[in-house]
Image 1 (spheres, rainbow, N blue to C red):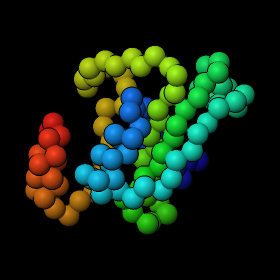
Image 2 (image 1 turned 120 degrees about the vertical axis):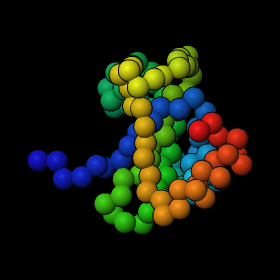
Image 3 (image 1 turned 90 degrees about the vertical axis):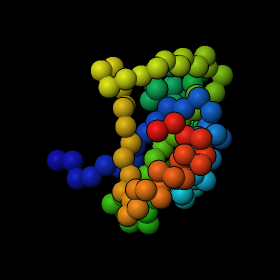
Length: 114
């Protein structure tokens, strides 16, 4: 039986930019970054010679709060496509806040499309 979510993983095209967004704009704590490569990485992502930079951020010290895992594949062609709710994909990551108006204003001030 599943007990809780361990983490939420998102594939990104620019890890540094994405870390800056989650850390500097949303206020999540940067927990660290790892570099993955080798036989086990190839097996996990089902791609030969796979290399990935992976960063972890978290908005809470509570153990039951899953971190956000950001994955940037290195030396791979980046395929970007405009997504919508009717395309099978990860369509949202949700966070708790006590002041949605303040968070919204921070996003607007930082030119984040809302």
